[in-house]
Image (tube, rainbow, N blue to C red; front, side, top):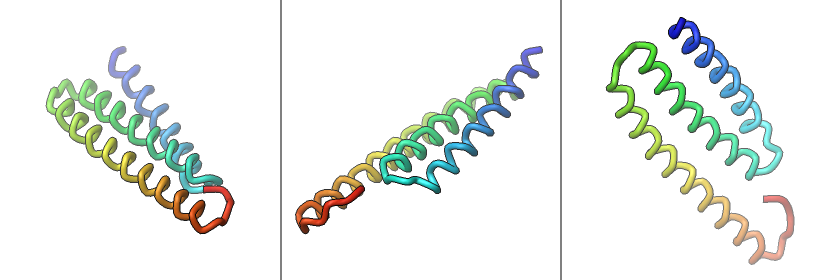
Length: 98
């Protein structure tokens, strides 16, 4: 019973990751893409943890922790890049969506 619940949860997360990937590709704004990438990374960590629970292997917790730190740094770098691009556009005097 427990394995079935874990498999259903992993399947549901896979579907939601796909929808977030579509949002990350289509946009329309950069902020939408940034939020979608952040959600994908969070759901990826949960997927790794559920897979570790399914296999009864505690090493997946370490993998999920490292992936969490890497995804946090990636989102911070993307946000910084987005803010720098917005500041550059504002300095040039072009107003538009970021």
